[in-house]
Image (cartoon, rainbow, N blue to C red):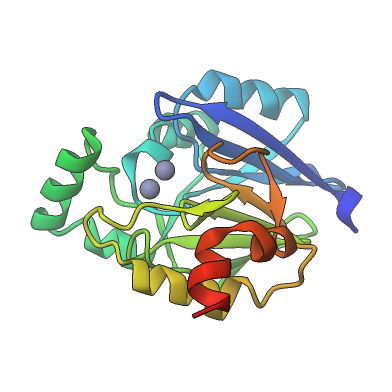
Length: 221
Ligand SMILES: [Zn+2]
Ligand SMILES: [Zn+2]
C-alpha cells in the first residue's frame, strides 16, 4: 500500500516550516499540508509530480504554517481546512491579538472548511483521517493516511511544539500524545512541521524510545 502514496517534504518560509504535498499514486489527486510560504516551491513539486490538489490542510492556525494558504487557494481554486477549535479560538479578538504579537505575523483568515476529530477526507484512493491533538494550540490536529502521520507542531523528531503561546498547554499536549498518538502502530511514519530533529522524519516507535517528552513525561509518569 505504501508505494501507492506520493509524499514530498518541502522546507518553506522564513520560519522553516515543513510543507507536504501528499497524493494518491493512482489518481494523482492530493492535498497540500501547511503551505508556510514559498508557494513557487510548492507549485513546482505539484507540477513535477503531476498532482491535482483538492484541499489545503492546516495542522493548526498559526500564521507561519499558512503563509501561502490564500495565494494557493486562489491559484488552484481549492478550499483550505482547519480544525474548528482553532478557527474559533483565533477569531476571538483577544487571542488574535495575543498570537499576532507572539508570532510577529498577522493571523490566518478563516478557513473554508472546519474539521472535527475523526473526520475523514477522501482524496483519490487515499483516506486522510483527522486526529484532534490539542495542546500546541486548541485546534491542533495530526493527519493520518496509509501509515503516515503529519504532526505539525504537536510532535517533532525528539521534541514537541511550544505550549507557551496563546491557547497552549503542555498538560493537554502530553495527554493528546498519550491517548491518540503513541497508541498508533509503532511503524507509523512521523512527518513533523519543522526540521528540528537530527533526521527529517521518524516513527512512533523511535519517538517512544528517544523523545524525552514521551519517555520521561508519559511513559515514566
Ligand atoms: Zn505552531
Ligand atoms: Zn510551527
